[in-house]
Image (cartoon, rainbow, N blue to C red; front, side):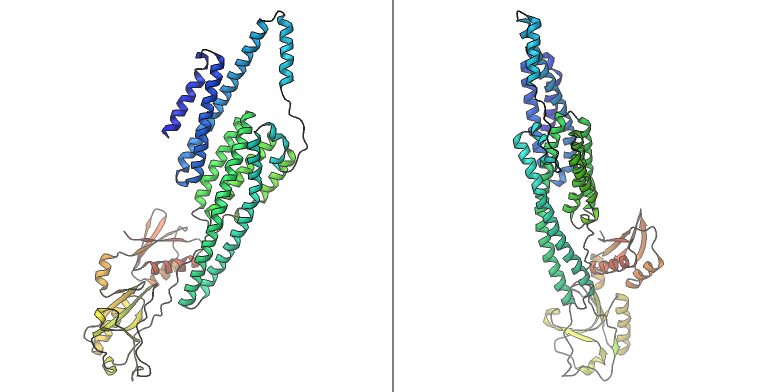
Length: 497
């Protein structure tokens, strides 16, 4: 920023002190140096703008100011150059023996030296019209046309990305249909692989498109500067800046921020190209550009996010008493199943050094055990409950059956919690932040309360805050369920601070 301000000061000083220079020739040289320096900073700033999205807001304002400053410098340079040439002409005339004749001859030479732009056949592709060779250098024209050719590469890569996106959508639907945790994990792994492939394609699209867009805008800016169309330069810069803001907003809603940015910047670039075609009176090219702009479909680029809400496959089983017991040597008590995702409550009926006699378990079911905790001793559990309240009801029932110290325990995403009260004091849980609707329907409230009867509802600004949930998985499950109930509802799961 400091360097930019320095250049603005230096170049402004050059413009307003032209008349103070000792010779017009030095004026021309001085302004030319300032213009070259500013153009160098412009190129550097454009590259930063492309490579660092976090700096774009600030850099966009700098670029607008620098572009305007460059135009001012260009005008000052043209004015100084014209004054210098005029001075040379007048000097020539004064030193001539026949001033009138000399002036006529000089004017004749000057007229002959002004190259008129010939008329060329008009072609459909804007940059392949031969008029461009009269306004930009051969090197810049080659870069411009190469950028045009690269657009087909971008389109091919976009088509490839869309193929991956279709696969992701199909896997999202498949994930919602599968019946087992193993099948669900398999789908998630495949989705992750497809998303990674899509990300590689995105990177190519982004890099190539940024180069194309930058090169095209640079060439069109040069052309409009020569035509002194400050109005078009200003309008184009505003449109392109707005396109970047729109694409940044789209990042929150779209699966691919790269394709979203492509859509908005491509639309703005086509607008610019239509104006360039107008200035050059290339009606055939403009018709083609207008047609391309009409065919640019937002829905093909601003794609809905592929959202996978992790499913829990926990089997919740109530406490029962079956006599005689269902467990025998042929049907032994199974190992406790540990779910890696979700929350389940059980009742621990005891911790034993040796396995207890089946008759001592009084026919309660479903039973399970593990020696994974408590120093390798055998911990026995009964039931599989949705809430702590259900587990506490089971505790009271077991006490009536004669169990001395049944205790509710829980697993949260695979973590064993033997002291629920202590865990709660350290983990405040997760809330749902619900937006998109002005009121929560009774059906939605009832469903949330069914999942967590202790949930509290409050409103902060335009959002409803619902909480809290013991685990993120519990909150995500409810979020997915209520979004399915009402398409307008948007939910974010947030940790309680």
